[in-house]
Length: 89
Image (cartoon, rainbow, N blue to C red; front, top):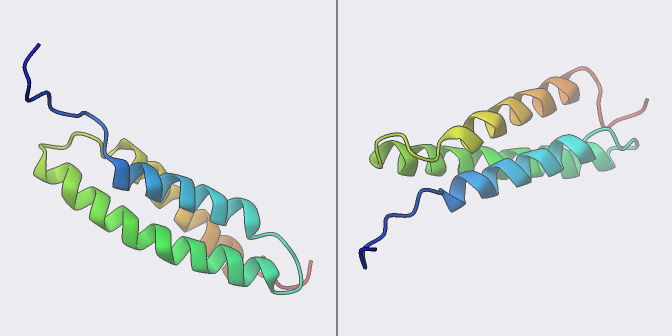
């Protein structure tokens, strides 16, 4: 095995995935708690997803799978917030 083993994972992409998933799960909490928690986590996940995408594309597309799922979770969170998620159900 070579001493310069290239890592296949993208830690920033995985961080975006988990933060976006947490935002999606916390978004339905009523009384604006979910709006603040889910919205803030989805914004953080969006920033991490862009960074993870750029890192993945710099390595010829390796490790961008979690970024795709993070983007889906972010879109679902923002869609849920736009129809009233996190306010009063």
